Image 1 (spheres, rainbow, N blue to C red):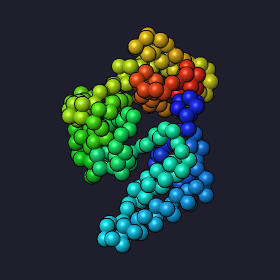
Image 2: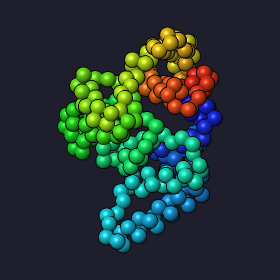
Image 3: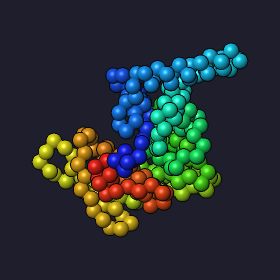
Amino acid sequence: MLTLAGKKTALFTSPHLVRINERFQINNVPISDELFLESYQKVQAAIDGMVKDGLPHATYFELLYAVAMVAFQKEKAEYVVLETGLGGRLDATNTIEHPIATVITSISLDHTEILGDTIEKIAFEKAGIIKKSIPVVIGESDPRYNDVIEQAAAANKSKVIYAEQEFSCEPCPCGTDRQHFCMHRTRDNRNFEVDLDLGGNYQRRNMVTAAATVDFLHEETPLTISRRAFLEGA
């Protein structure tokens, strides 16, 4: 959506499937080998200096996150979408101090040996990305962890946006191999029809989360998202 809105948009995700460049994208295109190597060498030199000073070596994820930041800065990205690694509170990506928004997609029992053995404990770690006065979008609400997130948001005086209250989405048959959805926006009672190449029922929830996030950006920040960018980017 951001790319189709004409903004130079960077994306950092993990893991990669085939080539490490997949983790670093500009306008949906992985960065070149040359840019990756140049960024990596700059980061590795900094890490070597830190180790000489007695500081611990960076983890694999921390190194690649730093590579992403160097590459995105060199490419002068206007917007950056960062996926956290594990949890959020102690994640390398949490060094971003002033994001436009933070997003928590869903919470389940995952990486319990690191994040905790209950939904509530994991929610606490995820809520660690919430920043002071920065809105947080919740992709899937759940009575088991809503209070944990609400408390973290209240402590930071941050607005909580529940995606499911902003948009609803139902699959509609279209007779093709693409997923076709009817999406309803609560604030103005408008309906949108959206096609999605990706399979899986969970993509409906992902689309609602993304739609709510971008709608917030459109309504409450200088960013303008056209109807075309909204629908084709979904």
